[in-house]
Length: 89
Image 1 (cartoon, one colour):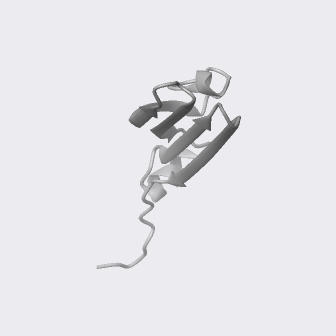
Image 2: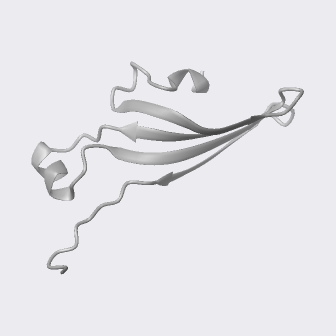
């Protein structure tokens, strides 16, 4: 079920899309590692988005599924650069 939300999911309207950056599958299919760059439409007033200089928030997510051990390890980090420095030259 988790994999079905990519690249978009109508049940999560703020999730606009995702692109696969890297993918690895073991020969037996037991290990699947996929890294995606995801795009979110944050629920914020238009003026606030304009002040922050962003329309979307981007994050990178790496999922490591090990079917043998029945584990899913998820790592994610925010990739969006907010430039809110006041008075910088």
